Image (cartoon, rainbow, N blue to C red):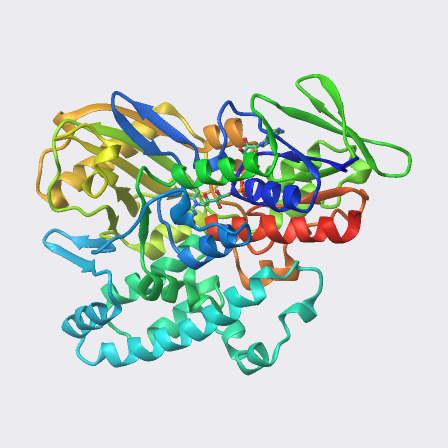
Length: 488
Ligand SMILES: Cc1cc2nc3c(=O)[nH]c(=O)nc-3n(C[C@H](O)[C@H](O)[C@H](O)COP(=O)(O)OP(=O)(O)OC[C@H]3O[C@@H](n4cnc5c(N)ncnc54)[C@H](O)[C@@H]3O)c2cc1C
Protein backbone atom coordinates (compact mmCIF):
# COMPACT_ATOMS: atom_id res chain seq x y z
CA UNK A 1 0.00 0.00 0.00
CA UNK A 2 1.29 3.45 -0.89
CA UNK A 3 1.83 5.90 1.97
CA UNK A 4 -0.80 8.61 2.00
CA UNK A 5 0.15 12.27 2.00
CA UNK A 6 -2.20 15.24 2.02
CA UNK A 7 -0.97 18.61 0.78
CA UNK A 8 -2.75 21.74 2.01
CA UNK A 9 -3.04 24.38 -0.72
CA UNK A 10 -2.30 24.34 -4.44
CA UNK A 11 0.23 27.17 -4.91
CA UNK A 12 3.38 26.60 -6.95
CA UNK A 13 5.24 25.00 -4.03
CA UNK A 14 2.42 22.54 -3.35
CA UNK A 15 2.08 21.70 -7.04
CA UNK A 16 5.82 21.09 -7.35
CA UNK A 17 5.88 18.97 -4.20
CA UNK A 18 2.86 16.95 -5.37
CA UNK A 19 4.75 15.94 -8.53
CA UNK A 20 7.95 14.97 -6.71
CA UNK A 21 6.06 13.04 -4.00
CA UNK A 22 3.91 11.15 -6.52
CA UNK A 23 7.09 10.27 -8.42
CA UNK A 24 8.56 8.97 -5.14
CA UNK A 25 5.60 6.60 -4.82
CA UNK A 26 3.35 8.40 -2.31
CA UNK A 27 -0.40 8.56 -2.77
CA UNK A 28 -0.86 12.33 -2.98
CA UNK A 29 -4.03 14.37 -2.47
CA UNK A 30 -4.01 18.16 -2.80
CA UNK A 31 -6.66 20.02 -0.76
CA UNK A 32 -7.36 23.56 -1.96
CA UNK A 33 -9.88 25.80 -0.19
CA UNK A 34 -10.59 27.89 -3.31
CA UNK A 35 -12.56 26.66 -6.30
CA UNK A 36 -9.56 26.88 -8.65
CA UNK A 37 -5.94 25.75 -8.37
CA UNK A 38 -2.72 27.79 -8.42
CA UNK A 39 -2.87 29.72 -5.14
CA UNK A 40 -1.78 33.33 -5.63
CA UNK A 41 -1.36 32.63 -9.34
CA UNK A 42 -5.01 32.14 -10.24
CA UNK A 43 -6.70 33.65 -13.27
CA UNK A 44 -9.51 36.20 -13.71
CA UNK A 45 -11.55 36.22 -16.93
CA UNK A 46 -14.17 38.71 -17.98
CA UNK A 47 -15.80 39.76 -21.29
CA UNK A 48 -13.06 38.20 -23.43
CA UNK A 49 -10.22 39.54 -21.24
CA UNK A 50 -7.88 37.20 -19.33
CA UNK A 51 -5.73 38.37 -16.40
CA UNK A 52 -3.19 36.69 -14.17
CA UNK A 53 -4.20 37.70 -10.68
CA UNK A 54 -0.78 37.22 -9.08
CA UNK A 55 2.66 36.79 -10.62
CA UNK A 56 3.31 38.34 -14.01
CA UNK A 57 7.13 38.29 -14.37
CA UNK A 58 8.52 34.99 -15.63
CA UNK A 59 12.17 35.14 -14.55
CA UNK A 60 14.84 32.43 -14.11
CA UNK A 61 13.66 30.17 -16.94
CA UNK A 62 16.37 27.68 -15.97
CA UNK A 63 14.53 26.90 -12.70
CA UNK A 64 11.37 25.98 -14.63
CA UNK A 65 13.46 23.87 -17.04
CA UNK A 66 15.07 22.10 -14.11
CA UNK A 67 11.66 21.39 -12.57
CA UNK A 68 10.12 19.90 -15.72
CA UNK A 69 13.46 18.21 -16.52
CA UNK A 70 13.19 16.25 -13.26
CA UNK A 71 10.19 14.52 -14.88
CA UNK A 72 11.78 14.05 -18.29
CA UNK A 73 9.82 17.02 -19.71
CA UNK A 74 10.42 20.58 -20.91
CA UNK A 75 8.34 23.72 -20.39
CA UNK A 76 7.74 23.70 -24.17
CA UNK A 77 5.91 20.37 -23.81
CA UNK A 78 3.23 22.38 -22.01
CA UNK A 79 3.39 26.08 -22.93
CA UNK A 80 4.96 28.47 -25.41
CA UNK A 81 7.49 30.97 -24.03
CA UNK A 82 8.47 34.29 -25.61
CA UNK A 83 11.47 36.32 -24.49
CA UNK A 84 10.22 39.90 -24.16
CA UNK A 85 12.24 42.47 -26.07
CA UNK A 86 12.07 45.13 -24.77
CA UNK A 87 11.93 43.52 -21.35
CA UNK A 88 10.25 46.51 -19.67
CA UNK A 89 10.05 50.30 -19.44
CA UNK A 90 10.55 52.49 -16.39
CA UNK A 91 8.98 55.97 -16.13
CA UNK A 92 10.75 58.61 -14.06
CA UNK A 93 8.58 61.57 -15.04
CA UNK A 94 6.79 63.14 -18.00
CA UNK A 95 8.80 62.52 -21.17
CA UNK A 96 11.36 60.68 -19.06
CA UNK A 97 11.54 56.92 -19.28
CA UNK A 98 14.13 54.22 -19.91
CA UNK A 99 13.33 51.13 -21.91
CA UNK A 100 15.33 48.03 -20.98
CA UNK A 101 16.07 45.93 -24.05
CA UNK A 102 16.02 42.15 -24.04
CA UNK A 103 19.77 41.75 -24.62
CA UNK A 104 22.63 42.57 -22.30
CA UNK A 105 24.83 44.25 -24.92
CA UNK A 106 22.05 46.74 -25.66
CA UNK A 107 21.53 47.36 -21.95
CA UNK A 108 25.21 48.37 -21.65
CA UNK A 109 24.58 50.95 -24.40
CA UNK A 110 21.56 52.35 -22.56
CA UNK A 111 23.59 52.74 -19.36
CA UNK A 112 26.47 54.38 -21.19
CA UNK A 113 24.08 56.89 -22.76
CA UNK A 114 22.60 57.84 -19.37
CA UNK A 115 25.90 57.96 -17.48
CA UNK A 116 29.15 57.86 -19.43
CA UNK A 117 31.46 55.20 -18.00
CA UNK A 118 28.66 53.33 -16.22
CA UNK A 119 28.64 50.41 -18.65
CA UNK A 120 32.10 49.39 -17.43
CA UNK A 121 30.82 49.24 -13.84
CA UNK A 122 27.67 47.51 -14.95
CA UNK A 123 29.64 44.84 -16.74
CA UNK A 124 31.65 44.08 -13.57
CA UNK A 125 28.48 44.16 -11.47
CA UNK A 126 26.72 41.70 -13.79
CA UNK A 127 29.78 39.42 -13.84
CA UNK A 128 29.66 39.24 -10.04
CA UNK A 129 25.86 38.82 -10.19
CA UNK A 130 26.29 35.87 -12.56
CA UNK A 131 28.84 34.25 -10.26
CA UNK A 132 26.43 34.68 -7.34
CA UNK A 133 23.56 33.32 -9.46
CA UNK A 134 25.56 30.21 -10.27
CA UNK A 135 26.44 29.71 -6.60
CA UNK A 136 22.91 30.38 -5.41
CA UNK A 137 20.77 28.64 -7.98
CA UNK A 138 23.00 25.70 -8.75
CA UNK A 139 23.64 24.97 -5.12
CA UNK A 140 22.60 27.08 -2.12
CA UNK A 141 18.88 27.57 -2.67
CA UNK A 142 18.24 23.84 -3.01
CA UNK A 143 19.41 23.31 0.60
CA UNK A 144 16.74 22.54 3.24
CA UNK A 145 17.65 25.37 5.63
CA UNK A 146 18.39 23.01 8.50
CA UNK A 147 21.89 24.13 9.42
CA UNK A 148 24.06 27.25 8.99
CA UNK A 149 26.76 24.95 7.58
CA UNK A 150 24.71 24.65 4.39
CA UNK A 151 25.85 28.17 3.57
CA UNK A 152 29.50 27.45 4.15
CA UNK A 153 31.17 26.55 0.86
CA UNK A 154 34.51 27.66 -0.58
CA UNK A 155 32.64 30.08 -2.83
CA UNK A 156 30.54 31.63 -0.06
CA UNK A 157 33.58 31.98 2.20
CA UNK A 158 35.28 33.88 -0.61
CA UNK A 159 32.17 36.05 -0.95
CA UNK A 160 31.47 36.52 2.77
CA UNK A 161 31.70 40.33 2.42
CA UNK A 162 28.68 40.19 0.11
CA UNK A 163 26.51 38.94 2.97
CA UNK A 164 27.59 41.92 5.08
CA UNK A 165 27.16 44.65 2.49
CA UNK A 166 23.78 45.55 0.98
CA UNK A 167 22.45 45.84 -2.55
CA UNK A 168 21.95 49.56 -1.98
CA UNK A 169 25.60 50.10 -1.05
CA UNK A 170 26.95 47.95 -3.88
CA UNK A 171 24.81 49.58 -6.55
CA UNK A 172 25.64 53.10 -5.39
CA UNK A 173 29.37 52.46 -5.05
CA UNK A 174 30.00 53.20 -8.74
CA UNK A 175 26.71 54.16 -10.38
CA UNK A 176 25.57 57.71 -9.62
CA UNK A 177 22.66 58.34 -11.97
CA UNK A 178 19.46 58.02 -9.86
CA UNK A 179 17.49 56.44 -12.73
CA UNK A 180 20.10 53.73 -13.25
CA UNK A 181 20.27 53.18 -9.49
CA UNK A 182 16.48 52.62 -9.40
CA UNK A 183 16.70 50.15 -12.26
CA UNK A 184 19.45 48.16 -10.53
CA UNK A 185 17.69 48.23 -7.15
CA UNK A 186 14.29 47.20 -8.49
CA UNK A 187 14.87 43.41 -8.94
CA UNK A 188 15.44 42.77 -5.23
CA UNK A 189 11.97 44.14 -4.52
CA UNK A 190 10.85 40.67 -5.62
CA UNK A 191 12.55 39.37 -2.49
CA UNK A 192 10.23 41.48 -0.40
CA UNK A 193 12.63 43.82 1.40
CA UNK A 194 14.27 47.21 0.91
CA UNK A 195 17.55 47.24 -1.06
CA UNK A 196 19.14 48.74 2.07
CA UNK A 197 18.14 45.61 3.99
CA UNK A 198 19.01 43.00 1.34
CA UNK A 199 22.47 41.39 1.26
CA UNK A 200 24.62 42.31 -1.75
CA UNK A 201 24.86 38.60 -2.55
CA UNK A 202 21.28 38.88 -3.84
CA UNK A 203 22.52 40.88 -6.80
CA UNK A 204 22.01 37.54 -8.56
CA UNK A 205 18.52 38.97 -9.17
CA UNK A 206 20.21 41.52 -11.47
CA UNK A 207 21.67 38.67 -13.48
CA UNK A 208 18.21 37.08 -13.61
CA UNK A 209 16.90 40.41 -14.91
CA UNK A 210 19.55 41.53 -17.42
CA UNK A 211 21.33 38.25 -18.14
CA UNK A 212 18.55 35.66 -18.29
CA UNK A 213 15.80 38.00 -19.41
CA UNK A 214 12.07 38.47 -18.97
CA UNK A 215 9.83 35.83 -20.52
CA UNK A 216 6.11 35.46 -21.09
CA UNK A 217 4.20 32.19 -21.34
CA UNK A 218 1.60 32.64 -24.09
CA UNK A 219 -1.77 32.71 -22.34
CA UNK A 220 -0.18 34.07 -19.14
CA UNK A 221 1.46 32.73 -15.98
CA UNK A 222 -1.60 30.57 -15.39
CA UNK A 223 -0.33 28.35 -18.20
CA UNK A 224 2.46 27.29 -15.82
CA UNK A 225 -0.14 26.32 -13.21
CA UNK A 226 -2.06 24.33 -15.83
CA UNK A 227 1.18 22.63 -16.94
CA UNK A 228 2.07 21.59 -13.41
CA UNK A 229 -1.45 20.35 -12.69
CA UNK A 230 -1.40 18.31 -15.93
CA UNK A 231 1.96 16.81 -14.96
CA UNK A 232 0.79 16.08 -11.42
CA UNK A 233 -2.38 14.37 -12.67
CA UNK A 234 -0.29 12.26 -15.04
CA UNK A 235 1.78 11.19 -12.04
CA UNK A 236 -1.41 10.20 -10.19
CA UNK A 237 -2.02 13.20 -7.91
CA UNK A 238 -5.64 13.69 -6.81
CA UNK A 239 -6.89 17.31 -6.60
CA UNK A 240 -9.77 18.43 -4.41
CA UNK A 241 -10.93 22.05 -4.74
CA UNK A 242 -13.38 23.80 -2.35
CA UNK A 243 -11.64 21.71 0.32
CA UNK A 244 -11.06 23.96 3.33
CA UNK A 245 -8.80 22.47 6.01
CA UNK A 246 -9.89 23.78 9.41
CA UNK A 247 -7.98 21.50 11.80
CA UNK A 248 -4.87 19.34 11.86
CA UNK A 249 -5.70 16.52 14.28
CA UNK A 250 -2.93 14.78 16.23
CA UNK A 251 -2.62 11.85 18.66
CA UNK A 252 -0.84 11.57 22.01
CA UNK A 253 2.43 10.78 20.19
CA UNK A 254 2.34 14.15 18.43
CA UNK A 255 1.58 12.59 15.08
CA UNK A 256 -1.00 13.92 12.64
CA UNK A 257 -3.78 11.36 12.26
CA UNK A 258 -6.33 13.29 10.22
CA UNK A 259 -7.37 16.64 8.80
CA UNK A 260 -10.74 18.24 9.24
CA UNK A 261 -11.84 19.21 5.74
CA UNK A 262 -15.16 21.03 5.27
CA UNK A 263 -16.21 19.68 8.67
CA UNK A 264 -15.35 16.03 7.90
CA UNK A 265 -12.42 14.04 9.26
CA UNK A 266 -10.03 12.80 6.57
CA UNK A 267 -7.45 10.25 7.83
CA UNK A 268 -3.88 10.77 6.66
CA UNK A 269 -0.34 9.54 7.29
CA UNK A 270 1.72 12.62 6.37
CA UNK A 271 0.80 16.29 5.91
CA UNK A 272 2.63 18.91 3.88
CA UNK A 273 1.23 22.43 4.09
CA UNK A 274 1.81 24.95 1.31
CA UNK A 275 -0.70 27.34 2.89
CA UNK A 276 0.76 30.39 4.67
CA UNK A 277 2.91 29.04 7.53
CA UNK A 278 1.37 31.16 10.25
CA UNK A 279 -2.13 30.06 9.25
CA UNK A 280 -1.14 26.38 9.16
CA UNK A 281 0.14 26.57 12.71
CA UNK A 282 -3.20 28.01 13.86
CA UNK A 283 -4.79 24.74 12.67
CA UNK A 284 -2.83 22.91 15.39
CA UNK A 285 -3.51 22.81 19.12
CA UNK A 286 -1.49 25.61 20.75
CA UNK A 287 1.20 23.44 22.43
CA UNK A 288 2.09 21.99 19.01
CA UNK A 289 2.79 25.36 17.38
CA UNK A 290 6.50 26.12 16.96
CA UNK A 291 6.36 29.88 16.57
CA UNK A 292 4.58 32.38 18.84
CA UNK A 293 2.49 35.32 17.65
CA UNK A 294 5.30 37.64 18.74
CA UNK A 295 7.77 35.66 16.56
CA UNK A 296 5.61 36.35 13.51
CA UNK A 297 4.95 39.93 14.50
CA UNK A 298 8.69 40.68 14.61
CA UNK A 299 9.37 39.28 11.14
CA UNK A 300 9.71 41.50 8.09
CA UNK A 301 7.00 40.50 5.68
CA UNK A 302 6.95 41.16 1.96
CA UNK A 303 4.50 43.94 1.07
CA UNK A 304 0.81 43.50 0.54
CA UNK A 305 -0.57 45.12 -2.61
CA UNK A 306 -3.49 47.03 -4.03
CA UNK A 307 -4.26 45.47 -7.41
CA UNK A 308 -6.56 46.46 -10.25
CA UNK A 309 -7.50 44.47 -13.34
CA UNK A 310 -8.89 46.80 -15.96
CA UNK A 311 -10.45 46.19 -19.39
CA UNK A 312 -9.73 49.11 -21.75
CA UNK A 313 -11.70 49.68 -24.95
CA UNK A 314 -8.71 50.76 -27.06
CA UNK A 315 -5.02 49.99 -27.56
CA UNK A 316 -2.72 52.09 -25.37
CA UNK A 317 0.39 53.90 -26.49
CA UNK A 318 3.70 54.72 -24.77
CA UNK A 319 3.68 51.60 -22.56
CA UNK A 320 5.31 48.17 -22.74
CA UNK A 321 4.13 44.73 -21.62
CA UNK A 322 5.76 45.50 -18.23
CA UNK A 323 5.91 49.18 -17.25
CA UNK A 324 7.15 50.56 -13.93
CA UNK A 325 6.23 54.01 -12.65
CA UNK A 326 9.13 55.23 -10.51
CA UNK A 327 8.27 58.91 -10.89
CA UNK A 328 7.88 59.35 -7.14
CA UNK A 329 10.33 58.98 -4.25
CA UNK A 330 11.08 55.30 -3.69
CA UNK A 331 12.64 55.87 -0.24
CA UNK A 332 9.50 57.63 1.01
CA UNK A 333 7.25 54.87 -0.31
CA UNK A 334 9.56 52.21 1.21
CA UNK A 335 9.34 53.94 4.61
CA UNK A 336 5.54 53.72 4.41
CA UNK A 337 5.77 50.00 3.65
CA UNK A 338 8.46 48.91 6.11
CA UNK A 339 8.82 51.56 8.81
CA UNK A 340 5.56 53.47 9.29
CA UNK A 341 2.98 51.01 7.89
CA UNK A 342 0.71 53.67 6.39
CA UNK A 343 -0.93 54.37 3.04
CA UNK A 344 1.74 56.12 0.92
CA UNK A 345 1.16 59.75 -0.12
CA UNK A 346 2.69 59.33 -3.53
CA UNK A 347 3.16 55.65 -4.38
CA UNK A 348 5.30 53.99 -7.00
CA UNK A 349 3.31 51.54 -9.06
CA UNK A 350 3.71 48.81 -11.63
CA UNK A 351 1.51 48.05 -14.64
CA UNK A 352 1.32 45.14 -17.02
CA UNK A 353 -0.38 45.11 -20.42
CA UNK A 354 -0.08 41.50 -21.55
CA UNK A 355 -2.25 42.16 -24.60
CA UNK A 356 0.60 44.20 -26.13
CA UNK A 357 2.55 41.01 -26.81
CA UNK A 358 -0.08 38.32 -26.24
CA UNK A 359 -3.31 38.73 -28.26
CA UNK A 360 -4.98 35.90 -26.28
CA UNK A 361 -5.41 38.19 -23.25
CA UNK A 362 -7.82 40.79 -24.69
CA UNK A 363 -10.34 41.12 -27.54
CA UNK A 364 -8.91 42.68 -30.70
CA UNK A 365 -8.32 46.43 -30.46
CA UNK A 366 -8.57 46.38 -26.65
CA UNK A 367 -6.02 46.30 -23.83
CA UNK A 368 -5.87 44.14 -20.68
CA UNK A 369 -4.30 46.27 -17.94
CA UNK A 370 -3.07 45.23 -14.50
CA UNK A 371 -1.93 47.78 -11.91
CA UNK A 372 -0.11 47.04 -8.65
CA UNK A 373 0.73 49.37 -5.76
CA UNK A 374 2.94 47.77 -3.05
CA UNK A 375 1.60 48.47 0.45
CA UNK A 376 2.45 47.65 4.06
CA UNK A 377 0.72 44.47 5.23
CA UNK A 378 -2.22 44.85 7.66
CA UNK A 379 -3.29 48.31 6.45
CA UNK A 380 -6.92 49.23 6.86
CA UNK A 381 -8.46 48.30 3.52
CA UNK A 382 -11.65 50.14 2.53
CA UNK A 383 -13.50 50.67 -0.74
CA UNK A 384 -12.92 54.44 -0.41
CA UNK A 385 -9.14 53.95 -0.16
CA UNK A 386 -9.09 51.65 -3.19
CA UNK A 387 -11.03 54.22 -5.23
CA UNK A 388 -8.86 57.11 -4.05
CA UNK A 389 -5.67 55.30 -5.11
CA UNK A 390 -7.11 54.12 -8.40
CA UNK A 391 -7.98 57.68 -9.29
CA UNK A 392 -4.54 58.88 -8.13
CA UNK A 393 -2.57 56.43 -10.27
CA UNK A 394 -4.88 56.81 -13.30
CA UNK A 395 -4.38 60.58 -13.27
CA UNK A 396 -0.61 60.08 -13.13
CA UNK A 397 -0.74 57.33 -15.73
CA UNK A 398 -2.64 59.53 -18.20
CA UNK A 399 -0.23 62.41 -17.68
CA UNK A 400 2.97 60.35 -17.90
CA UNK A 401 1.94 58.33 -20.93
CA UNK A 402 0.12 61.27 -22.58
CA UNK A 403 -3.26 59.70 -23.32
CA UNK A 404 -6.85 59.53 -22.07
CA UNK A 405 -7.55 56.28 -20.27
CA UNK A 406 -10.25 56.83 -17.62
CA UNK A 407 -13.06 57.31 -20.13
CA UNK A 408 -12.01 54.16 -22.00
CA UNK A 409 -12.39 51.83 -19.03
CA UNK A 410 -14.89 49.03 -19.70
CA UNK A 411 -14.63 47.49 -16.23
CA UNK A 412 -12.26 47.25 -13.30
CA UNK A 413 -11.85 44.84 -10.41
CA UNK A 414 -9.80 45.59 -7.32
CA UNK A 415 -8.01 43.37 -4.81
CA UNK A 416 -6.25 44.30 -1.57
CA UNK A 417 -5.27 43.31 1.99
CA UNK A 418 -8.71 41.95 2.99
CA UNK A 419 -8.83 39.74 -0.11
CA UNK A 420 -5.39 38.27 0.57
CA UNK A 421 -6.57 37.32 4.06
CA UNK A 422 -9.95 35.97 2.90
CA UNK A 423 -8.70 34.04 -0.15
CA UNK A 424 -5.34 32.70 1.08
CA UNK A 425 -5.39 32.98 4.89
CA UNK A 426 -2.42 35.25 4.36
CA UNK A 427 -0.70 36.61 7.50
CA UNK A 428 -1.57 40.34 7.71
CA UNK A 429 -2.60 40.14 4.05
CA UNK A 430 0.97 39.82 2.77
CA UNK A 431 1.12 39.37 -0.99
CA UNK A 432 4.25 37.31 -1.29
CA UNK A 433 5.45 35.92 2.00
CA UNK A 434 8.38 36.72 4.22
CA UNK A 435 11.17 38.99 3.02
CA UNK A 436 14.66 37.65 2.26
CA UNK A 437 16.70 39.86 4.58
CA UNK A 438 20.03 38.66 6.00
CA UNK A 439 18.34 37.55 9.22
CA UNK A 440 15.52 35.84 7.35
CA UNK A 441 17.63 33.81 4.91
CA UNK A 442 18.26 30.06 4.64
CA UNK A 443 18.41 28.34 8.08
CA UNK A 444 16.96 31.49 9.68
CA UNK A 445 13.58 31.03 7.93
CA UNK A 446 10.66 29.02 9.36
CA UNK A 447 11.52 25.33 9.16
CA UNK A 448 10.34 22.87 6.49
CA UNK A 449 9.90 20.11 9.07
CA UNK A 450 7.82 20.77 12.17
CA UNK A 451 9.95 20.51 15.30
CA UNK A 452 6.90 19.47 17.33
CA UNK A 453 4.72 17.29 15.09
CA UNK A 454 6.39 14.17 13.69
CA UNK A 455 4.75 13.88 10.28
CA UNK A 456 4.03 17.54 9.49
CA UNK A 457 6.00 19.54 6.90
CA UNK A 458 5.79 23.00 5.38
CA UNK A 459 6.57 24.43 1.97
CA UNK A 460 6.03 27.74 0.17
CA UNK A 461 7.19 31.31 0.15
CA UNK A 462 7.50 31.62 3.95
CA UNK A 463 10.01 28.76 4.10
CA UNK A 464 13.28 28.29 2.18
CA UNK A 465 14.34 29.70 -0.17
CA UNK A 466 11.72 32.50 -0.13
CA UNK A 467 9.22 34.55 -2.16
CA UNK A 468 8.61 34.24 -5.90
CA UNK A 469 7.53 31.56 -8.34
CA UNK A 470 10.97 29.99 -8.99
CA UNK A 471 11.77 29.81 -5.23
CA UNK A 472 8.34 28.21 -4.66
CA UNK A 473 9.13 25.48 -7.19
CA UNK A 474 12.43 24.92 -5.39
CA UNK A 475 10.71 24.89 -2.00
CA UNK A 476 8.37 22.12 -3.18
CA UNK A 477 11.35 20.06 -4.26
CA UNK A 478 13.23 20.60 -0.97
CA UNK A 479 10.19 19.67 1.14
CA UNK A 480 9.44 16.53 -0.86
CA UNK A 481 13.06 15.37 -0.66
CA UNK A 482 12.99 15.79 3.11
CA UNK A 483 9.72 13.87 3.38
CA UNK A 484 11.03 11.03 1.22
CA UNK A 485 14.17 10.87 3.36
CA UNK A 486 12.33 10.83 6.71
CA UNK A 487 9.15 8.95 5.99
CA UNK A 488 9.90 6.19 3.49
C1 LIG B 1 0.21 40.28 -6.79
C2 LIG B 1 1.39 39.36 -6.82
C3 LIG B 1 2.38 39.52 -7.77
C4 LIG B 1 3.46 38.67 -7.81
N1 LIG B 1 4.37 38.80 -8.81
C5 LIG B 1 5.31 37.85 -8.98
C6 LIG B 1 6.07 37.83 -10.18
O1 LIG B 1 5.86 38.66 -11.07
N2 LIG B 1 7.01 36.84 -10.34
C7 LIG B 1 7.23 35.90 -9.36
O2 LIG B 1 8.10 35.02 -9.54
N3 LIG B 1 6.49 35.90 -8.21
C8 LIG B 1 5.53 36.83 -8.02
N4 LIG B 1 4.72 36.80 -6.91
C9 LIG B 1 5.00 35.83 -5.86
C10 LIG B 1 4.49 34.42 -6.20
O3 LIG B 1 3.24 34.48 -6.80
C11 LIG B 1 4.39 33.60 -4.92
O4 LIG B 1 5.65 33.64 -4.25
C12 LIG B 1 4.01 32.15 -5.14
O5 LIG B 1 2.96 32.04 -6.05
C13 LIG B 1 3.64 31.55 -3.79
O6 LIG B 1 3.34 30.20 -3.91
P1 LIG B 1 3.11 29.31 -2.63
O7 LIG B 1 3.17 27.91 -3.09
O8 LIG B 1 4.01 29.71 -1.53
O9 LIG B 1 1.67 29.62 -2.05
P2 LIG B 1 0.30 30.28 -2.45
O10 LIG B 1 0.24 30.65 -3.86
O11 LIG B 1 0.01 31.31 -1.44
O12 LIG B 1 -0.72 29.07 -2.24
C14 LIG B 1 -1.18 28.69 -0.97
C15 LIG B 1 -2.53 28.03 -1.19
O13 LIG B 1 -3.00 27.50 0.05
C16 LIG B 1 -4.41 27.64 0.07
N5 LIG B 1 -4.90 27.53 1.45
C17 LIG B 1 -4.67 28.42 2.46
N6 LIG B 1 -5.27 27.99 3.58
C18 LIG B 1 -5.88 26.82 3.28
C19 LIG B 1 -6.67 25.91 4.01
N7 LIG B 1 -6.92 26.10 5.32
N8 LIG B 1 -7.17 24.82 3.39
C20 LIG B 1 -6.91 24.59 2.08
N9 LIG B 1 -6.17 25.43 1.33
C21 LIG B 1 -5.65 26.52 1.92
C22 LIG B 1 -4.63 29.00 -0.53
O14 LIG B 1 -5.95 29.15 -0.99
C23 LIG B 1 -3.61 28.98 -1.67
O15 LIG B 1 -4.18 28.47 -2.84
C24 LIG B 1 3.61 37.64 -6.84
C25 LIG B 1 2.61 37.47 -5.86
C26 LIG B 1 1.51 38.32 -5.85
C27 LIG B 1 0.44 38.10 -4.83
